Length: 411
Image: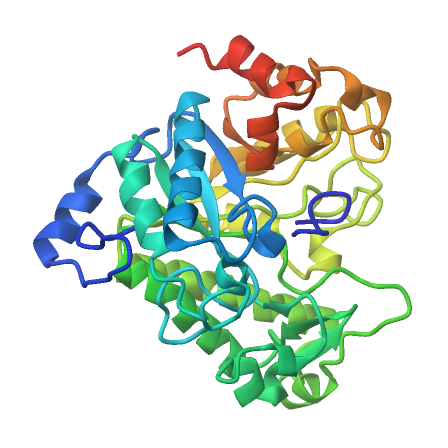
């Protein structure tokens, strides 16, 4: 996720059983989609969510190479934990690095499962997650990273049939990683198609994107999209405007096509917590931090105001009183953005910072996160919170999450 956040890391149709995949009948799909959301069909009740990260085996699976039975047991364990913790939403990362945790015809099986990209793990994690989440009264949101290909720069490490190897002209190497170039229409079409495959196969409660659109800046390095800009950017006043147009087009097109593919599936984004600083733009927040509008070329405020997305979870990963980006200033700013829109606002919470000795004194206080929810309760536009991430819900460092549950999730 974003700078100072989780940058370092970053389900079945009802006819799917572990190890096998079948296309759900129309009747089964209709029955699945008719089930009410745990927090209301329009998202008017509270979202209590957790991100379950798979990139680099952060949360799940605990390591690559476990048997299908072991992996399935771990996944069900995470869902059980969410239900016990009085959460109602699990956001499962199913496309961590241009690969898949379902039998995709477009991209290889993820290496986080077997240790070898493209190797069939012998079961369907996404399909299992949908079915088992529903059985526990949980929503399952499928989390896709749109443009990241790999956390390395060697295409030979990718599966032989990986689209990035078949289309090397789609690839930009930057900051020690490989990315698809969002400036290429062919890339945006391919990524959209790969994601919509999961929407067609499974009754997903939502499609979820994180903060990685264009990658965050790296000192002394340039994201080399010169050729694409020359070919497609002539109508724009500058490269930044063209890049924002590319991401706007991608997000808007995804929103439209998700609804056409499966009307009950929602679309959410969890961007970096600062859109723009007030010193840059009078519409911005009273902060001094990185800016998703300028750094990721993601005009997240526009997506909310235009109603393109069903929900937004800004990563407000700072404590109350943090000088550069104060939680107590950002929550009301986002509430004002969401007010009057059709987009549900939830707040992304940095549970991973609680008790971390590298963090400030505020994060050594078990009550800090609970104070966040108390503050957010003042703003009716805030419809819930999502915690990064599952490992910290389970470990409950310094009892911070237990206090949230005790103080705010009694029902």
